[in-house]
Image 1: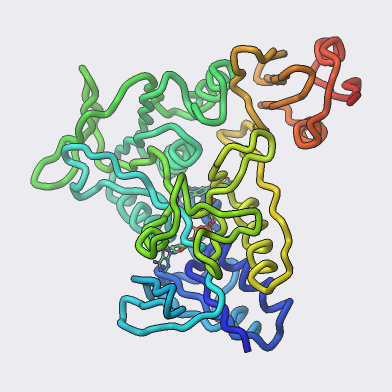
Image 2: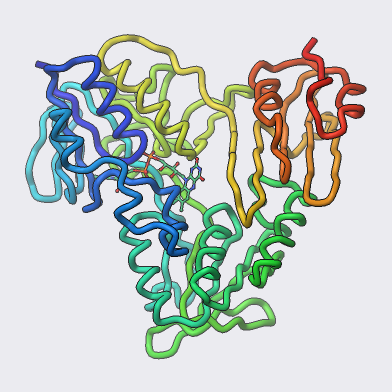
Length: 405
Ligand SMILES: Cc1cc2nc3c(=O)[nH]c(=O)nc-3n(C[C@H](O)[C@H](O)[C@H](O)COP(=O)(O)OP(=O)(O)OC[C@H]3O[C@@H](n4cnc5c(N)ncnc54)[C@H](O)[C@@H]3O)c2cc1C
């Protein structure tokens, strides 16, 4: 009987466990999870802060579901060390769990910027359900909040705290909001909406320190400015959680380096989800997409390979599809053009569309506001379609007339 061991019970780990059980009804499948909550949706966390969902609503599978699949779960236990030669993982409890095939689905962790006052009471990060409960609790006693970082998680957190009735400001050191996913024009439309929701948006300014009194945060200090805050949420990015793999001598780049079968540099040890570095489908560059759908897909492919199926994973494409402040947006591929790229844009009110073309190939699309036909556009990027620029210019927000040549 093969012994499969999975570290991490997030999107990637759970998808892998389910796939392994499907392939092999008799195998031993064990999951180790450092969190004490069962598998839940991280995507739902801002809605819990906003009061639209309860923490229980976010649980996607609990003890019953895992028991039914005969997946052994060691919840609330941390894997401390891998012993690749002995094919076992040591837990913080001291227990040793043997494996034939191991999957590291250890996800991401929030970046903690070194900053005076960063360790004060009232300073939070949003990554886990436990973080969410703490933020929720803190928000009940707070009147004002500052969110540091205007990426996807920062903006969603700011809007959620606003919905709870707090005075909210969001501070972003780059020149516009969501600098990873949006260009300046799209970001301006979104920032306008966020401000319209009553949130103060400050861009192009860095938080240098957090102001504290008796160990409790009272505000944030920018270059020449102070913003009052009873609580602060830091959301300046995430990075792959590679500590366990690195400790075992696995090759590490932006994440745990994997080959086309999602196997790490150590035979028999695989990686999937936010912890894994894979290839960009378009450019071949090493990337960590850090999105839910990609984590699920990788968990599945890793499991198939752990079970000996030899299924190649071609890589993923940078793709984001979200709704923030009532504005839906989808970005696919490269949306910030390189020097030789051409870009075509159309804008009307809150709708903005952009296509980036490299040579004759559609390399990226960004739709904001009206995302009708975004699927068609995304497909053009995925298929590396070639298009005539006249068709783009005459399409007037519609891709119906875009011809893939
Ligand atoms: C607030 C928020 C909003 C988001 N919104 C979106 C969105 O709209 N769309 C989207 O695509 N993505 C979104 N994401 C990102 C998405 O949730 C992640 O890409 C996805 O959860 C990654 O799944 P994963 O399984 O790779 O890792 P994770 O979900 O991070 O799971 C990894 C697990 O491994 C555990 N672990 C780590 N090390 C150990 C160890 N040594 N021992 C035991 N356990 C360990 C961790 O505790 C964690 O539970 C959002 C994330 C957050 C936080």
